[in-house]
Structures are given as C-alpha cells and as structure tokens.
Image 1 (cartoon, rainbow, N blue to C red):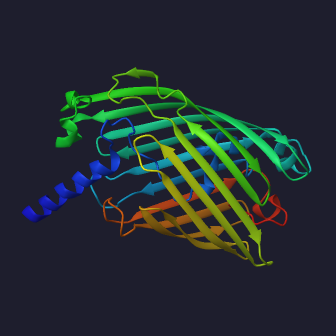
Image 2 (image 1 turned 90 degrees about the vertical axis):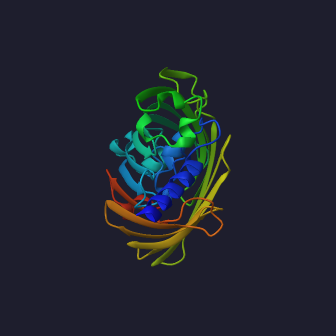
Image 3 (image 1 turned 30 degrees about the vertical axis):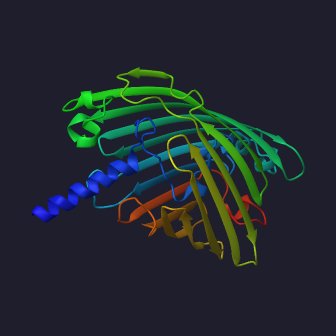
Length: 323
C-alpha cells in the first residue's frame, strides 16, 4: 500500500511538470494526434476546407492515472455554397462558418472553450484558393483548490485558492490564413492574439501567451486502390518547447486507412480508421517516446466525422477523400 501511494505521488509530481510552466500562464497544451481531421480548430482560415461536417473526438491521455488530461471536442462546420447547387462548391464558394466546443480537464483545472470561426476564400487560379479566417474565443476555467499539489499550493498566484474553488473567464481571438489545393495545403495561424487581456472572475492565471501554428499536408492517389497522405504540424508558444509532429497514412480502397505519427521528443502513435459514404471514424494509440520526460502510459484518441452534404467518394474528384 505504501509503495502504491509513493508511486502515485511520483506520477502526480511529473504530471505537474508536464502541465505547468514556472508561472502557470501557459496552462495545458491541447494535443490532438489526429490533427489533420480538425484543421479548422487550429486555423480558422481552414474552416470548411473539407466541406460542411460535424466533428468530434475524445482523448484520454495517460489513461488510468488520477488527474491525467481528458479532452472532449465537438464542432459544426457549414459551407453555405454547398446548399446553392454549385458545380464545385469547394472551389467556387466563398464563405464558411464553424462553432467549436472543447472541454479539457487536467489536474486541478477544468477548462471549457467556445470558438466561433469564419473563413472567406479568394480563388487565385483554376485550382488554388487563398483562405482568410478569424475566430472569437471564449474560455471558462475552473480551479479546484482541493486538488492542488504541494508545488501548486506554494505558488503565490494560485496558492491562495487552496481548499476552495475559483472561476475565471477569458475572451480572445484567433487569426489564420491558408493556401489550399485539392492535393495540398499550407497554413499559418495565431491564437490568443490579445494575450488574454480581456478576463473576468478571479484572475488566477497570468494571461494567455500568443501561440503560432503552422500546418501543411499533401495527398496523392498512387493507384485506384492506394492513396498516400502526409500531414505536418508546428506550434510555438512562449514558455513551452516547440511542438513538432507529423503523420502519414495509406488509404486503401478508399475505405480503410492505416498509418502512424510522431510528436518530436514526446510520443509516437499508430492510427487506424474506416471511411463510409458520409462517416469516417478514426482511432489512435499513442505511446511516449523513450526520450520523453513526461509520464509513462498510453493515450487513446477516438474521432468521428459526419459529412453533411454529398459523400466522401464524390467530394474530391481524383484526390484521396481525406486528409
């Protein structure tokens, strides 16, 4: 029993190191291994890039450990050009909107984020578009002072809430732009442009640093039965190491995909998914790399996307049906 309690304490200590910076202003970083299925969350300019859809995922990080991060996400994207009967709405349409809701728990914190995004696109050539987007971001953060660790309790900013509860609200906005083609995309975005300066409630966190996000992808049909899809992701944020990751997958018969990914100095993953006429489902099994300083244990991530108009078989012409 004593060894179990000691092991639990050690795990909790490293959990704090993984989630908190020295000033606690960065909070937790939201990782999504299947980031290529949720491009618009990271960049409002990519809203509607894959058409109108309902999206969601559940991520259980370091499963089986008390206080480990758990993330739930749901969103709705609407490209109104799809309702107008255009021959190629993905290329000739102009406007798209999305509503995103993310709930995240990590240690003593519970965070709910509501993001409303808009994207406008300009046709540059017969196959290229420039997409510009903006998002309004509202976050509520709840602190459970009964769940603070000894290190957090000693922090002058949040230690005063030991044994109690506190709530904080932050209003900010995101900006993004992207160059898109049916076979590839390049994008860049900024999150928390105002650095969390508009806040309410008890300000137990020192603002929200700006986060810079770059995404890129390439997909190609190698034959009628095999397609190759590559995606890359880069994120820079003050107070945290750079987040660099990529994934690669093969789409077989336009029905099943298998692949893997790697988050540098952090973790690797195996991916599997099934594609139906209007639905795609994905699963990721993630495991920490040997060099990672974070906690041992596995991460499970489930994703579900429902296409509102058309089907995946007809949505992209000769290009693979997914990113």
